Structures are given as structure tokens and as C-alpha cells.
Amino acid sequence: MRLTCFITTLLVFFLFAPGKVAAEPKGIEATAAKNKFQKPGFDKSAFTEEDAEKLAIVLKQWGVSIAEWAKKSIQGLLKKSAIAGSTVEIAIGHYASLTGPLAAFGHATDDSIQLAVEEINAAGGIKGRKIRLITCDDQGDRREVGNVVTRLVKSDKVVAVLGEVASSLSLAGAPICQENGVPMLSPASTHPQVTRQGDMIFRTCCSDAFQGAACARFAAEYPQIKAKSAALLYDKTASYCVRLQESFEKKFVELKGEIVLIQTYEEGTEDFSAQLKAIRESKPDVIFIPGYDHDVANIAVQARKLGIETPLLGGDAWDSPKLGKVGGKALNHCYYLNHYSAQDPNPRNQEFIKKFSAKYKKTPEIMSALGYEAIHILAAAMERAKSMSGKEIAAEIASTKDFEGVTGKITIGTDRSVHKSAVILEWKDGVPTYVTTIPPGISN
Ligand code: PHE
Image (cartoon, rainbow, N blue to C red; front, side, top):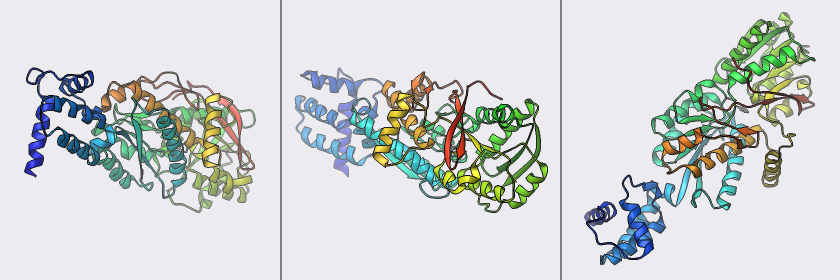
């Protein structure tokens, strides 16, 4: 123990001693290493194993006989300590629902993030350092989000965090990242409050203000619907659903539509017959259901059984193969807003679909596209950043402009959100089919 203290003191002395105390080392490499350590505001995260080698040269030149020993100690320390994760490799965290009701979202996102990490590392990493991705299962549970995000930022010392898909879960993780000065990028959380948690919190997709308004405009103006009245059915326990129905309602009323009935349910509801019977009585032209896939599938099947033929309309959380499979024909004449269409010929998109399908033997769904895009935006920002400090990385994420993403050109706005067009898709026998594009600029 005492010996370790002695070595550490010695090292600290050599690392941080002002230039004039020690004699100048010989050799370009050694000088570079010494300058790096003696620089004011020395960035520990830039300290690599290779640096340890270089430092050993410096120490040897200074005639210190413990040089080799010191080098081994540093390398040992590096391997064990959290700094190792951010030096030899750069640690990036991802929190996702790998189990629980939203597990399909978590896997879809993590698959594409892993694919992107492989690509980035194969191309030489970030500033020559490989990315180490640490994915944590938050079980789709707000409390568990607290545990895993705290672990990522405090113990794993990740330089940035990706997550979550569901807004309620991002809202649980964001304050922890903000407090610890670690940038967080949600690939898919559309609730406006997510990015309002602070200047470290970003989303790389549109927000619900746009999404709800775009759905309302589509319902009111699309020739096959031209809705004058709407009923709403949403999960009052999920932030995403609450906010989306609010922004839909606001825009629909603004467009002179009438909300004839509002019905709610809670997470875990399986039987929607009471709500659906009430909606049937209110005879709306459209039913807006901003829910997650599992609930929407049940609602669609039960609605059709009750003889409701009215078109159903929803948001981005409808983009799920599970929904298409369970909902099947019950979803015919139902529409939803999405961040992109797999049929979009944009070469970035098509290239991504090809790579993803080759690796996972399935077509990517929206969360995969958004996750892939998010980590590439982050990696590009990290590459531009002067250091791996949270502040520098956040500043570079904020300055993202015209980034050629899978879902289109991404520019991060002053609200740390993305403003771009979206598409409306229609379910046809369980297959999402492109209908139209909604340009940006429809906001509340
Ligand atoms: N936008 C949803 C939310 O904020 C998440 C989501 C995005 C779900 C895309 C599915 C697809 O909770």
C-alpha cells in the first residue's frame, strides 16, 4: 500500500511538474509525451497505454531506475481503472428495454447501434480510439433506468449516453446525465420535455409538437379521410401518449375539427371494449390512438370486432412488425406517422438497410434506423470535439448541421431537437405502405 502511494507520488510529480523543474528529455516522442502531461488543463481521458510507454522513455532519460516498473504500474492501473474505458477505448453507454413490454424497441435500437460501432471501429474509431459500447437493460422501468444510467455515468465513466426510445424512460435518465455533465442523445423520444432537462440532452428525431400537429393536419386534409370529427384514445400513464394527444387535439381544433370524445386507458390494459363502445356511439370520422404497439394491436382487433370501421390513426410508436403481425387485416385503412419510409431511395437509407439485413437477416424497423443515425451523429461530434469532455462533445452535437442521415438531413436546432419532414404510412394487410410526406414547419 505504502509502496503504491510512493510510486503514485513519484508519477504525479513527473506528470505534472512544471517544465523547468526537470531536464529536457531527448527524442521527439519523449518530448511530445512530456508536453502532453505538463500542458495546463491536462486531459486525463487522452492518456493511453502508448503514452505510458512514452512516459517510460522520459523517465529513463531522466535516469530514474524505476521507469519500467512505473510503466507497468500505470498500465496495470489503466487496465483496472475506469479511465481505461475512456482511454484505450472510448466508452459509450446505451440504456434500453431489453426485457419488459418495450423489449422489441430496445433490441431494434441496440442491434443497429452495435452495427454502427462495428463500422466506426473498423474505420479506425474516433480519433484513433475504438468505441466500447456498454448496453444496459433498463427493463422498461423508470426506477431501473435510474440505476443503470447512474452506473453508466458514475462507474463506467462513459463519455456519452444513448437512450431511451420511450419518452417516459428518457425523462427518467436525462436528469442524471445532465447532473453529471454527460451528453445524452435519445434516438426516438419525441416528448418535448425530454430535451428541456438541460443543455446536455438531445434528441435526433422530431418532437411530438410536430408529430401530433402533422397527424391532425393529415386527418383533416387527406382526401380519403377529410375528418371533421375525431375521438381520442390514449394511455394516460405514458408521457409520450399524453403529449401526442394534446398536440393532435390542439391542431385539429385549430383546423376547425371537433373532438367528440376522449377516452383513456392505463399501461397493462388488455380489454378496451368499454372505451371502444363509447367511441362507437360518438361516431367520429377518425380515431386518434397515440399508443405503443402492443396496445394498438389489441385496440384495432377489438374495434373491428365491435363493428367499428372508422380509420385509426397513430404516431411513430406504431411502426412495429409486432403490430403488423397481431393487428393484420384489422389495421387496414389505418395510418400512422413515421420518421422515414424503408422505401425511400435515399442512398444512405438503402445502404443502411442492406448492411442491417446482411447482419441480422431481417429488415430494420424505425428504431433501428433512428438508433443507427443517433450513434453516427454522436461519433461525428466526438471526432470534431477538442477533447472527450462532456461540454466539448455537447457543443459539437449542438452544432450538427446537414448531417446526411438515414432518415434525411439532420440539423440540431437551438431546442436540441431535429426539425425535418415525416411520412405517413398506411397498413395494408400488415405491411406499412408509403402514403405521403409531411414537410417540417407544422408546429403548435
Ligand atoms: N416516440 C416514442 C416515445 O417518445 C418512441 C418510439 C419511437 C416508439 C419510434 C416507436 C418508434 O415514447
